[in-house]
Length: 252
Image 1 (tube, one colour):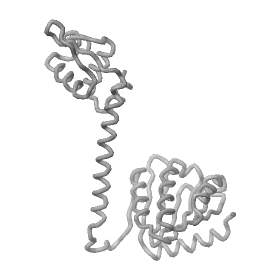
Image 2: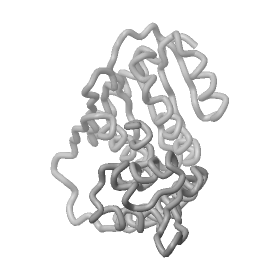
Image 3: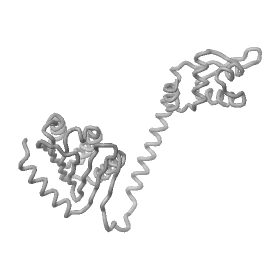
């Protein structure tokens, strides 16, 4: 029952609304007195709950001897609530996307003296990659030094979206993969001819890379993933040289 109520709460029902609706499905019809006794909800609250359920299309009533007898709508009616919630979320997403576009137009008065950023947690790392994506322009060269396969598997879906953005912006990519993940590398190369991959027997958990003048380093393993994003040409150029040296020694 708790699991069912958790699901119902996701589409907008309160705990008491769920309780009354599920009770009506069991009873099939009931007057308020019977509902109060069955659900142990006070009579002072039951009408408000039933009114809310009617507004949501989950219950209706008939008059019997001038007394309301309440009945449940079929469970399929829950789909309508889900569709309404989805429509609302789509509208909110449009508003958020519009807000993002407007915020990106804000003129920066002064660049920060130190452009080093620290990110923590999976959401934090996703924010870091959103910033990386926003810095990719046409013909940007990206260099990725990855980690052992299990170190980035939980982020593969998000990285796939990153590579779609990179491909759309016609940016080139070179990536050093662990030997055991040639399949993923093959998929990347198939999707984008501007992408190259080589392989090394990697054992490290942390990953790093260069995107233009940006240098990032991160690890996704453990309970507290974290990363740094550094905008500094000296760092970027230094690690680019490191990458190129490793690239020469890596296997195709």
